[in-house]
Amino acid sequence: MKLALTFLIFGFLGGLAVAADVPASAPTPVLVELFTSEGCSSCPPADRLLEELDSKQPIAGAQLIVLSEHVTYWNSDGWKDPFSSQDITDRQNAYGKQFKLASVFTPQMVVDGESQFTGSDTHSLQESVEKARAQQNIPVKLSSTIDSSGKLKAHVEASGGSGTVYVVLALNHAESQVLRGENGGHRLSHVAVVQNFQQIGTLKKGKEFLKDIEIKIPPGTDPANLRVVAFVQQVDSAYYPGKVVGAALSMPSK
Image (tube, rainbow, N blue to C red; front, top):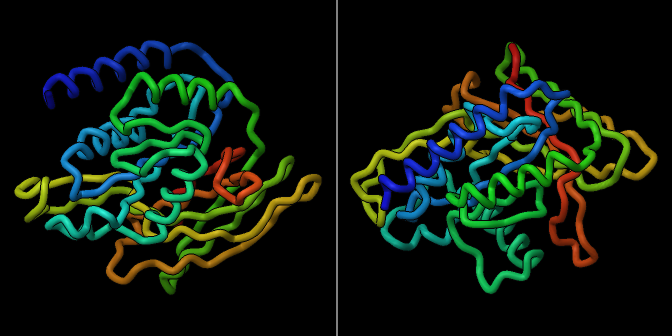
């Protein structure tokens, strides 16, 4: 089963690589969130797919901005995921209500807040990204720096729409030797692992959003292993997360 899935992933990426040779205008940023856990034996293939999406950018016309979001509800099954966060679990639960799911699950991918599916489902991924990139997004500008004292500062700009503005701090790369649970004995690797997820304000229709923020870097983190993501997301009438209407990625400079 794992071998078949590996061929499926590489076949999917190979097919898209041909399409990527077609000249195109500036790619549309598309946010791809993967809800995952080191305690889930079905998650490593989805984790590997997310890494491939990040490094190869295989879908023509789309800039895939990926986030690996580790949930907590697998932590009682023999292994506590060191990257898990209750805030991420809460975010997935909110998506579950938005999508009217009977229950949340891993691995789950969410594309631009509008489409959700099993995280290793390459067919649904391609369909969802194609749909997202065909829609007009609002411009989001993001820059980030690490000053001489080691503080990470970011500047965010957005205009032309409305929604809640978020900034996310993530590790470019992370690895873990899993000792117990469903993945016990395996060394797992991850990309864009969320460390800090915060709401920084609201973009109002007809207005421009400008904000400078300082992001706390977790102790012991290598500043060279960080990325910052900013995005604007609409909410529905029940305040559940909805469509992501703009996103940007920044690698902090010194």
